Image (cartoon, rainbow, N blue to C red; front, side):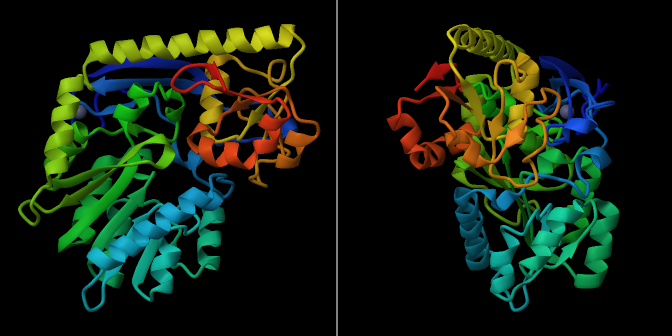
Length: 406
Ligand SMILES: [Zn+2]
């Protein structure tokens, strides 16, 4: 267990314990449940630099491999977001005579495919071989490696300096953050930027979105902690922008000190975090109380519905569903199955809680009385698509920020 901060070696104080959990994306076949891997999912905050992080850690080889099941292109909203991201970088940062962009954890090429179509030099660094293949099929150049100092030095000597190093929902996954930042330092051109967008501690605590906490998310960034981390590694935080992805994230821009004028948004968000006491143990203790309340309310509701003979199924099996079902002890006795459109999850079980994952057609065959919406960050997209379920009297169960039926 970590007692010292991975960024600054400061003291870590635990603020939430979500119990014994498997790896969130370790979907398994019914015959593979023997010897399933579990660890204690608990998060703490550094009393020096305010970086929130996991106390126990799953080795990265166990998290990213040939069977990695998160496909970034799975949602239309995500595809649009990353296409806009790519177009913006092409317009604002990749404007020199022969620009070069490196993406850390390019997944299935959802962002870089737009860059590739524009004919701009690029390289995705992606350790999970199966999603890397999908990226290659989209015309994206991929290096199948973990990004660290050594990988970065190799890229620099083969391709030259990068104008942009980009990451989306990957930087918070990387425990060896010092090596990562030394790598970015080695790779980035003098006027280059390191742009990354990641889940926001402020959103997680404000919305009681405790299901954002799982093995892959080693860090839970805030503007305060990212600024401290940047300064420690010779960078300056020059912009921070709230974006709606995954329920509310922040896009951070780091540059070399003095290279850019920091935006007002950085100052405003820092002030807002101070005012909220975002990193204070008292505020984080109130978050933990709300998390426990959600567990109690959700389990009580599901047991009541079962007692009334109502049928409840799960909708969507994102990594988040692993945290919720294992923390709350929700098994097939309460939710007999969950539907998900990702083919590689179908026929498998949600890790730990072992809810069977069925294809989307199972949802309407026949419609259940209630649907527990695990993919709540896509609630609008899903509810619009499943209008017929509501019209036939079906109801949605949501648990973020609190348990309610809509
Ligand atoms: Zn620290």
